[in-house]
Image (tube, rainbow, N blue to C red):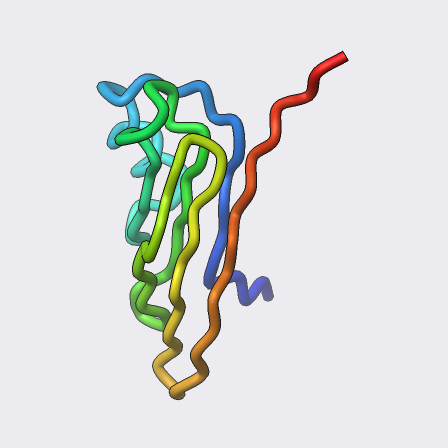
Length: 88
């Protein structure tokens, strides 16, 4: 049994108009945060199971999303998702 409660997708390249359809297909009952305010291709998606976690974005840019996470059993932490494009 998988006990995954939190996830992230980096470098999605999904247009904002398609995000709801795709995120619902990935995890129908989960909640999502995106960084479309900073990147037209929503490079960073954060998703979580709301039955176990509350997730809040506390900062974002085109390459990073800072999140505060509270579990239902009072565990609190911060997670930082970083996207760094590969350059040769």
